[in-house]
Image (cartoon, rainbow over all chains, first blue to last red; front, side, top):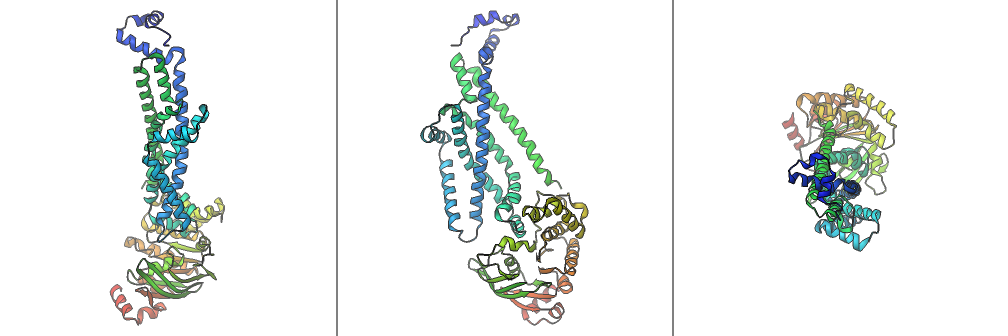
Length: 259
Length: 240
């Protein structure tokens, strides 16, 4: 399965390898088996593509769902007296969605989406299924984040927009949401980071993501040490890059706050 | 232009407006004064339906705006409003604050609106602030921008809700000056304020509200020189 043994590898390798201490030779051998032998690094790059695809798709879906639900919920809550019947029904549906999604584990939602509702066949279908499952899940959390952002904007902003003749939706879109987004960016970034890590459970519906790549290599080499530590490092690097990018974005959006 | 009949407004059990009848004609400058809690701000905010009346009718330019068939968004285009807290949009530059509504409502093209914005900034004495953000401006400057923003919609009437109450004393004058010029240009204005000097100088009519009613009204000279209602006498004795 591994396809190559230590002695052959050492003999074929460059001379400097033979002069090294044995534990280091071992580490290099495992790195070789994990990444280089039979171009196994391709498992990781292909897996990374799937991880990023699922994350971006789910993020997009999550933000769309989240904003829609947040706007409905705030419209409902900001009405004095009794809101009309349609708004009350839609609001109740939103609340039910939030309760179910936030009250059950992501893994269970993924299993239900993958084996009960959609039953995907083939890689593309699995990726789409994963995007739906993670996006619907993320939407519930994004909704509450966006709602907190909308509530953080003073009522005077809505009144100013409405007094100019803009309707509720236009005031939301051009005045409230841009300010809310600025306030919630840290929380939204946190959600993105959680999301990219959580996609690793897509292996349970046979998604060929980054985590699956490491698992595949372990089944070939029977050496879990290097593949899994490498996997952790790759996730860590992605998260560090995202943190940095979000920090830059936050600084840009704060440009109008200068006094 | 605005005709109010038996206007009532309650917040829960709390009755703020108990039946207001009032006519405001084109070109009038009506100043509303009264103690806090008298309902004067609520009355003003009912005029453009920022507060929904619980009873009575408001007819604006022949249209009953409290009826269900009336599109309040169209009515509000014709009624500019200036708030105590300015309520400029902090994420937009001064220019964008002014052009947002005319452009997004499809009333003006972007370049047209921009030209108009610069004219209005000239008019409120802040031509060099087009690219500044509200957070960089003083309260007085922000309120003058807010007036320009309301004027950008070419309203038929301007509503002012205590426009100088949140300002430092030395900035009150600059805002009142702009409002005075606006009055001289013939704008119909309804102003809730505590600035008695402004009422005396600019108003064509002064209303005194207390306890959810209009208790007394008169031309500014008579109003201040010869108050009839004991509560108005009491109020004027305290503020003048």
